[in-house]
Length: 382
Ligand code: 13P
Ligand code: 13P
Ligand code: MG
Ligand code: MG
Image (tube, rainbow, N blue to C red):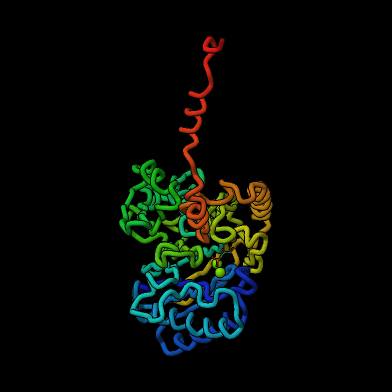
């Protein structure tokens, strides 16, 4: 049976500030989607939260980019926004950039990750969901999961993985994408995806047969709205086992925290901390950035789960290390590289500051030369 797994997420109001979601809003979203499921529009659904974001996980037979499925998510988020507005939650409706739904949520604010595939005899999947970061946060772990044999033993051991994987990389500024085949083009891939503000991995396909292996949300709200409206906290779908990386290989990159964009005011770098569902409530300097991993077994389209995969003492050290990294970065205060470079800053007053000081900038070099010319040279005296 061919099914589609769609994960659509949005921040429709924070409780308190940007730290978490409010149960009444989450319940409103859940109730709306449940009714649609009962009507037969979806096979199954689940609701996840991470920080101030809500994700609707859906299985169905409508394929990717379905108006029905996107419409359900949009309307659920609108219903949730009404409650968020009533409770005057912070940034109520933050990610719903348009007043009207027009067939597809892409470009309207919510983040979308979708994959259509034939359900295998056993179909384990992981849905990652992060807050206080951006879609490029998945670049490094996706590389390790699907192209680094030191992380993923299956690349060497599993015959279906041995031919490698192809990464579809999107330039978020131009909307152009390129497919890069690993291992052959690994260095080209890394040349692009190391530039995290511009290139994001959109999909990963298995070379053996072209099967979809991973799908990420790639929306950049800041580029869509032209001003700060949230840092596009992303979702990622990864298929696991028999021909794909094992669950443990998929989670392994998160045992070594790395630094991502999107902490405090969307304008700081910080370590991505893998946490349990319970601990996905970033409050220290609005962070540090968090990621949860929800595991499901899909059975005839039903979502069996979720399993809270980072709720494992084996990730305690990663959390400790992430806290140490956070201390090191916080030491920098408002200075780069903790603060993002000017062109990546979101709540930016920098142009205003530059405008204000415009007339006060003088040519220091010319002044220096002038001063130098004034100084009499040795021998001129007397
Ligand atoms: P089991 O032997 O527990 O099924 O594990 C197989 C495996 O490959 C785990 O990575
Ligand atoms: P969100 O993108 O999660 O809404 O966070 C905004 C922010 O800048 C918090 O400091
Ligand atoms: Mg928010
Ligand atoms: Mg958020």
